[in-house]
Length: 296
Length: 293
Image (cartoon, rainbow over all chains, first blue to last red):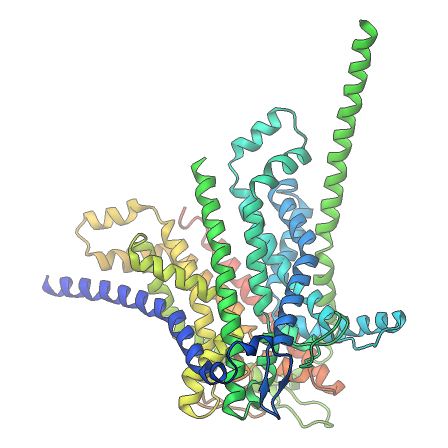
């Protein structure tokens, strides 16, 4: 019997210990990044974020081109993806719950979510980039091909599954009573969507957009392969650029000096903090929504 | 009086017809826009199939890569590398993730649970490249060189949130009567969990693990400066190792057509593996059927 009590205690201890270990991982991650970026912070302070030059030869590091690249590609991707994710969410939650069309759209979205990002990047590089180059030639602008625009389009395709899945989940959480009430008043399908489903799920849709944004901000490979990787600040979306993630991917193994490495890690730190914050807010909104949906 | 009444009926009729029209139109538009989502998928898969199939042959999966200029060559080192790195990541992360999931389902309201859940969500949203940096500082720097092991650590950290969440969700849905019945017969707590609760939820947990495996087997970013890649056959986890995504990245960004061909082949192989494991997970779930009712 004593043995049983011992193993019982040991088991509970293991469970708790694992919990503590898992809780420690992100904390340790944060501390590691902070410690490693101390040299860069000490050398540049807040100027790191606002400086335009990134010159490893002269040891001058400014993150502005990458911050701009990350923000512009992500937001452009969100705008491009929004109508699609929104329609997919509507279709799967309401319009065509069953039937072939819904099944096709559903599996298409699932398969898109399963494609590794390096394959998106490869496809973008060999198919999308030449296409953009052709269009640029026709329009008479410098035909880079690899550009902020190419990165945004690839990102948009990649985040459609995320945004639509979350929006769909939120829409299906809406209590059926209020939809039925609207139908019983004689509302058409569209009117119920327009005046009940969409307004009720505003916050959830917003959360979906936020989580998709979090993903877009941190996406590395696909962006790295089609964005062109120049460390100069771009002046329009047809020019090549770089994002925080892509510059880390490109230059980390080449970073020879401590300050260079530390500056790259500081970029990683910024990326981590921003994505963590965005994810946290997004989850918070969804949790609120769950509580509200269940309470009514 | 009558004509006014008639007029109103006609107007109502018109309004209703308009509403129905609007309803149908919106349906068509929404269906059209969402069906466009199929286009990139079909395009990507078509390119992979058309370009990939011609480069996949026996040599491709049994030979080492050849230097630029020489035709042929394969990527057997990357296939082996991917398998080793992913397997090692599973070994490293599945036990803590499953135990963490059990903890969350057993003590859903404790303070530590709230913290674990919070951490898990943060971890899930962390960009893979950042996790790569973490593994680099944690493993590569102390070891002094790149290694497959450090890549597995990075992928393992990415896997934890997926498996943990799947475990928690599965175990939460197991009816409490089951464990009450076991406990009422005097079965000690840890045996109730290990012999009753976990086996009942095994299907969901394994499903989570398989889905997690498909996620990490396509990851490239965290391997760039951990596993690093290698043109040689290497089965030693303490040394740099190639993997399918790394090979795709390196060959895809090279200027050589022959290497592009290899990259198409590797991409097709990777996507077949990813979708294959995915399918396996689905079949596994549906075959066991019923399950957690």
